Image (cartoon, rainbow, N blue to C red):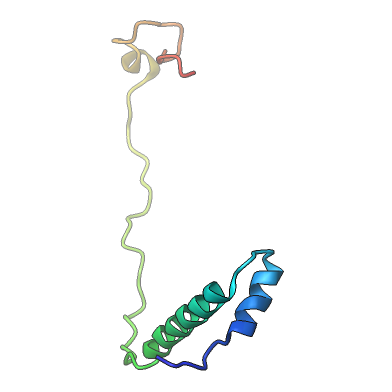
Length: 91
């Protein structure tokens, strides 16, 4: 953990921009926490790079037109046979 990554004056500046009132104890605590967060980001730089996956290809098949039900067959079990499906009311 680095002690000088963020100082309380920087925290006060950000808090002022955000119009947040912080007392001295909060400034110290947030400065320390911001320093820990920045240290955590620095550790990400230590993560080794991995090789990139091969280029992905579309695994979906192209659309194909297939035979389907005609309107009369599709509506044969429907309650309302005026050419539409009738669904429940949604409020």
